[in-house]
Every structure is written in structure tokens, then in C-alpha cells.
Amino acid sequence: MQQLNERQQKILDYILRNKSANNSDIMNYLRSSVSRYTVLRDLDFLAKKGLIKKTGKGRAVRYSPVFTSNINAYFEPDLYFQKDPDERITKTAFDPEVIDELPYLFKEEEIKELREYNNKYLKKIKEADKEFLRKEVERLTIEFSWKSSQIEGNTYSLIDTEILIKERIEAKGHEKGEAIMILNHKNAIDYIFQNKKRFKTINLSQIEEIHWMLVSGLGVKRGVRNFPVRIIGTRYTPIEGRGNVIEALQLSIDKINSLKDPFSKALGIVLMLSYIQPFGDGNKRTARIMGNAVLLAGDICPLSYRGVDEAEYKKAIILFYEQNSARYFKELFTEQFKFAVDSYF
Image (cartoon, rainbow, N blue to C red; front, top):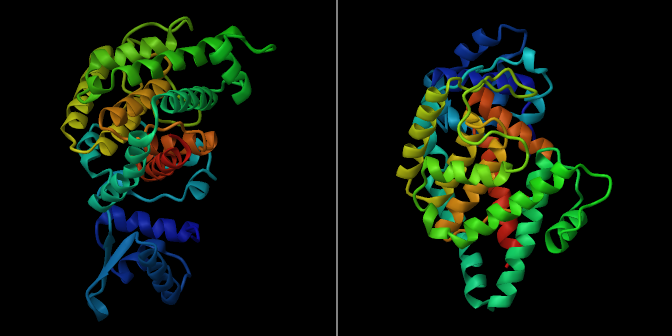
């Protein structure tokens, strides 16, 4: 599908911010020599893309967002990241209002489609023999451990990761910490597969436990941080103060537990752990494992993220940090879920 240009993104941002606008409002906002015809063509393009809706007739025509929450706001990633972090107009601090928007991550029809897709997974695991399932879990474990570590800068290849996990042989020319990171992933994945039902309801102690599995032996302090953290490539600064971090985390956990479907719960925990950054390091690793734990608890196929581009993954997370828009990350999450259903078991 054709991407938005800078003018179209500005029009969309204006409509989302104001909840509704007519053609004159938009023309005044643009303050340029662009013609009325061009603006109407842009509006038609945005409507066909399913980003805005048109109501009324003649001079009474107005345009409003299809999604009224910031969590589903549309940003063209390539266009957005053409600007350096200091040039982007962004949120720079934790916004607690995003917690109340978590129920709007998915539309009902999206959940229905995902559940129908998951039926393929349920059928496959029901019909497969135990030895085949064991090997498929091992394959997913290896590929998840490799990709999740790669997203964090680990330089092990997939083949090196397989040899490490199966034979405990470390690859030459790599730091010891890289092998520890991968093996920690393996231990955490084993744990969530062996304790699926435990994650039907999530709590802080579970998250801390998974985090410690992932960072043990890597020089990272155990438990919720009591010091500030900063993130490369963004002006967003996570919440500070241990008490404030725990409060934001608990509010997020309570909201996520109130969600009815595993897809929303899984995506919600991945996003909020990445956003709050409750630990000194290992936050996104913990988020991905917790997301899979929630999926498994709901009899949903877990993700390996094998097919995700790590640069796009990071862009999607930064968009959530800076704009509280989960739309691009949701697209990647959905793609990787379908990839996992088609590729495993």
C-alpha cells in the first residue's frame, strides 16, 4: 500500500488531535500554497486507507479519525524517522493515560481474525505426537533465543545459537556474556512452557522472576530499579523513583489482567514493560518472554520473532515511547504471530 507523504501525515495528525475537522480547517492549518483540490485528494487517500472517516454532505462534510485513541494513531515509520530525535515533536516523559487506552489495542474484528488463525495452531498441536511437539518447542526456543538476543545486540548466528543450546559449546570470537544471554533465554522459555497456566493472571513477582532468569550472570541488579535509565535514539525518559516505577507497573498489571483476550494482554505487557523500563537492563527481553507466557496461558501460539527486522522492531517501540502509538508495533506483533502459526508445530 502506498505510504503517506509529509503533508498527508500532517493532515492526519491534525484530525486526530482535534477529533474532527472540515476542509477549511485543514487548509488554514497547512498555511501553504497547496490547492483545495490537493487537500481533498489527500483526504480521500486517507479515507481509502482506513485512517479517517467522512460524514455529512456538501459544506457540512467533516473528517474524523477511525480510531479515537492515541494508542492507534497512525505514523508513517519511514517518514517519522527521517528526523533526528531532537527534531521530532514527541512526548518525553511517561504518560499514565496510556494505561487506560490498553483496552483499545485491538478491534473486535481483529481479535476474531487472530483467534481464527490460532485454530490452525490448536489443530496442529492436537494431532501431533509428543516427540514432534518436543522438537518443535526446541526449535522455537532456539530461534526465539537467537532473535531476542540479536535485537539486544548479541552477535551469535542462528547456527552458533543452536550449537550452544544443544551442545553447550560456545562460539569462538564472542564474549562470554553473549552465551549467557542466550542460555538465560532458553531457561526462561523452558520455564514458561512448563508453567503455562501460572500466567493466566500476571503479577509483579512473576515479572521479577522472569527478569532475573534473563539477566542472571550478566552483572545486572536484581529487582525493580532505584536509579534513572536513558534510552539510545529517543528523548523519552522512563519514569524515575522506585516507588513511582512500581506504582506505574502495578497499575499497568491491573489493567492488563482486566483485559479479556490473550492477544491484548500479551501485546499490553510487551509494550508496558518496554515503556516503563522497570529494571536496570533486560526490560525488552523480559517483555517478550512475558508476552509469550501470556499467550501460552491462553492456548495461543507463542512468537519466535524470527522474521522480524530488529531495526523495525526498535522503531515500533520508539514510536510507542514518543507518541504512545502502538499501531506499528501491533502490525509487527500480528505478522510475527501469523508467521509462528505457519512456521511451527
